[in-house]
Length: 212
Image (cartoon, rainbow, N blue to C red; front, side, top):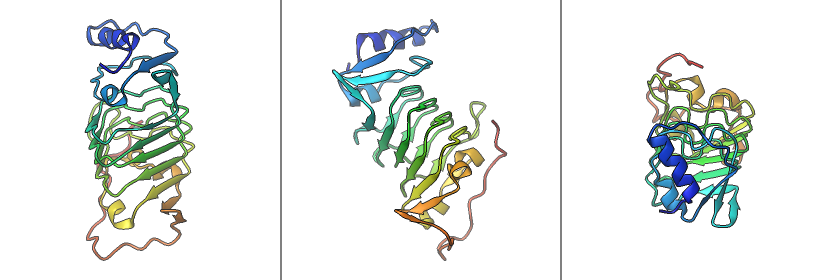
């Protein structure tokens, strides 16, 4: 429940092995929470499309706090331009926002961000990672560690504090949005001199070389 019959049909075709993906222009949902709880086994579409909540086109999505996990592929290729994920959501699935080329801003509070989650979001410019983020990317044959791959227009990463940032486990170079952005901000202040807090005993290393 909570999503259109058209979306439901696409979802069923993915599950049952018919991977002929239709040229849908929009998916209409009636309940954002219900949609976020859909378990996707593949892309709904493989081209840009719009999401409508009833009769209103959604460009900014705020994930309901009652949603514990965002399924793999769920928003891939959608034309949303901003996403807000609170710390009540603990997991962002594989390629959940893959290919969202209209996405400009992402606020992320989930503890775990899986491979490919924001890969090919080529117009993403700003990522805010709250202090609740713990793990970004993992060992896998699927987009190994490549969470922000090809996000070439990233220009700022915003964090709450250096201590929390230093405790994040990034699997590879492209797991870390700073690989592209270069500019780190604490709130609205750019970090020009990096001071590692005394509470940090070691800096978590990158686990494996980046694989594109």
